[in-house]
Length: 456
Image 1 (tube, one colour):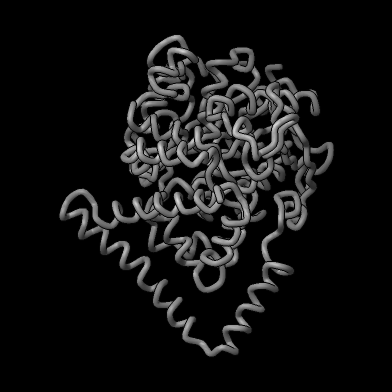
Image 2: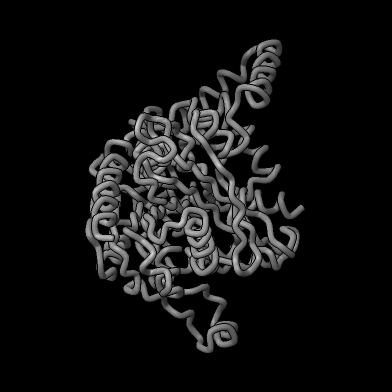
């Protein structure tokens, strides 16, 4: 029952976003937005109606083909399988945090091009940390030609793909079941305080490397800033930190978090009333939704819906996410998140501050000893930072990324992605990310790696 309510709530939130996006806040916005939505959704709906007019025989044939695609020719069932299918070596590592959560990491220990095999290349570890509602899949699903993880492995790095508690690959605990409310009583705070350090320690224990690189996408960067503040012993463990569309406070966002913030009390109360502690876990209802709306005839609706939430790039849509890549993407995402994680980001939209989870003034007194949730000191992150952002990113708005830059003490690069229409998801799914971002990052990592080895 909770899963159905969970899915229904997400539909309500999506509709709120849809309505707000369509109507806008002014007549001019309304006209422009309505035009955009019509140009996006009407052709897709027409295709669905056209395809639905096929004969019963054709419809049965289509259904058989869809079933065959999912059972035999469809996207692989897991990230390790996806990596293996692309010809790369892969390892699965279970990491237990100090508070008992079991995190699954995926490792690509070496590449497959000449000079990147076992014992070749620098083999400096590099940890890739995903964003909210994501998993390690975001670093590999676009394939060896475009995905960052494969590029790094082929350049000689030891690539580690992290997963945080509560997502598809890390829904385990030494004592708690996912059916228990206590399992889901965590937010972004715990990702930074427990999850990131545990994975870093495991990499060091496995490889012997005392220093490594860190790549954080969106919430992956948030975790790093929290760890740097609350766990000072980790500040010197990194050669450099690459922040892709980093998130901290989000007061300028125009994404779904702005919409959730607009209805914060209602949504939080609804979740509390029905005991919903996690959202969009990759469970049967979500898989069924993806199967119906994100495959075959209706794939364009899914792609357009995501663009509505993350920033429009209408002209290049099918060039960025072709129909072959899209089912892989939607099979792995969303990967789930706790209620606290989602609401913590929404609360930052309201407060304009980067704080610990806000329980409300009464409970804050009990938990923190003060009425307001304490602010994180992002300036304590002294690791050399390379920050990448996009003008069209509606999640981590340019003004909010600038807020991060102004507070970090060791920013060595602050680079705008110079691609028209580049949005929040493009950092991990766009084919253009390779030339616009990944190649540059790789060059920087190689230079910094050589410099670090020569100095040690």
